[in-house]
Amino acid sequence: MPGTGRFQRAVSDLRTAVTAAVAHHRSQGATGDDVLSLLLQARYADTGEALGDEQIITDTLFLAWAAVHGLKDVLPHVLYELARHPEVERRVHEEVDSVLGGLPVQAEDLPKLEYNRRVVKETLRLHPAVWMLARRSLVPVRLGQAELPAGTELAYCNYAMHRDPTLHPDPLRFDPDRWLPERAKTLPRCADITFGAGVRKCIGDALTMNQILTALATIAGRWQLRTAPSHRYRPHARVIISPGSLPMTCHFRSA
Figure 1: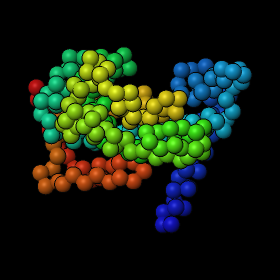
Figure 2: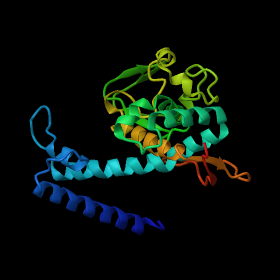
Figure 3: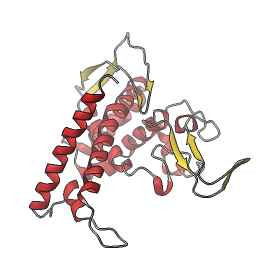
């Protein structure tokens, strides 16, 4: 297919770079608290064995892939919803100003950005990056009225579930406060499956949330973004739901 060769070369180049970084960290003793050092220091709980280089390289490549899509496909939807909901945007700005005080965002600031986190969570409910997930039954299981034998392949659409009014009242309304603790605890189990659930839940959930929060707080501390007047929102659903072309204008926050 057109472009396949370029993609494979890019993957090869990235793998080469990560392999070299792993070798460098290992030669230096890997005593830091960066991702590669922590992976090199990690041990399997049951055997005490270290991770092999191939496992570390694969995990690092996955984290890089997940990080790209969190910012590329989710953050634009966050900014799009802020432009559509001025009151939500106002509360985002107030919290960012209060927590950061005009300074760059730090790791210790992220837990304090409670409303910003709810905004991101509500965006992910309406615009999940991965819109369909799959599982395989290991044993016979009953699902509703269906009897599923072991080995059944199941696909489910979290995009549709997140817009189900039986799970989320007024589901098309952008309401970050539906994720307030006292309201969220009334939701059915697994009403939010943005990152899946259970033992197979995506390991990148915290990474994605923290990256988007950091970017959002950095942008919202100085700027207001507005969708171009002539723009028509047209998301594309492939493996990832992309917002498509989303031109916006930047306006400096004078106050």
